Image 1 (cartoon, one colour):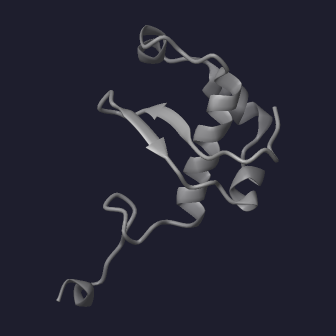
Image 2 (tube, one colour; image 1 turned 60 degrees about the horizontal axis):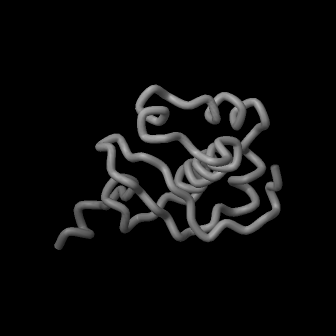
Image 3 (tube, helix red, strand yellow; image 1 turned 30 degrees about the vertical axis):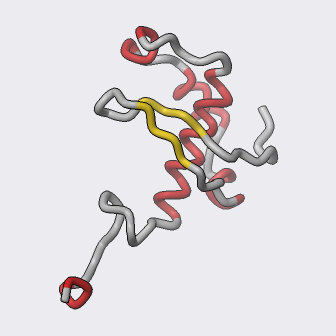
Length: 92
């Protein structure tokens, strides 16, 4: 598993079951927060992931998913409806 290889996209099933693709590469800080144990745990497919056909490389997919999640935690996008926290002045 290579943490230094750039990723231009990653696929993950969303909670609604649709495909979700991201274009933002996680920062080195986000990648550093992903541990081997986290990757091994996340690479174990959930029942709905097994039904969907799984992944050709579950460890790489798990690493990408976890790194992107860390990136959203460390650097939330204020324009993202799920991660944005706007002030009341922002709505005027």
